[in-house]
Image (cartoon, rainbow, N blue to C red; front, top):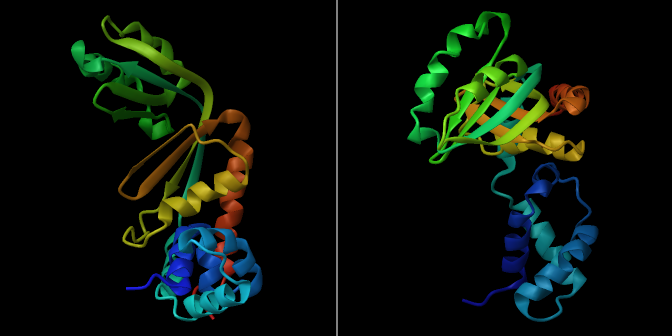
Length: 232
């Protein structure tokens, strides 16, 4: 089967996921988009493809886009998400934790955590690393329980977390995580760590970015509530 301009355009636009919402709502200038992807199309085809031919293929792609409803579902899914900001946290990474039964040591710390008052201790277990995100006051206690050959390999102070409480979200809709992480990217905010449980997604970042991160997410969710949730 011949690999055509239409095939190359479809492949390229499928790869450019950041254009998904604009494609769904037909907000793009076909000629401008054709010029943007022309180098990639030519590289895929092995010859210089004309802008007009690419623009025609772009128009056909957008008009027959099979996932038009997915963006609407995504916006519907995230619009009711609740966000919680917590600060004064730290992140510890303990390596070779399983060699000294470090989890048993941590059990002695858990009763000190006042979860009802909003204190937190998250533990992310990996094959060789144990990542702990907790209120800063617990860091010295945890460090005192580390015994060789276990070792503390990373310690980050002055952190904040934003937890997206999305229990009403349908996680079968693609793009949930991308929607939120993209807000930090657009705001120039570096995410130090991200983890999730069913219904909650937590982003960890420097405390200096706390207000900016919270405002970015809040503004995005408010904007979603004003958007038409069905394309065209």
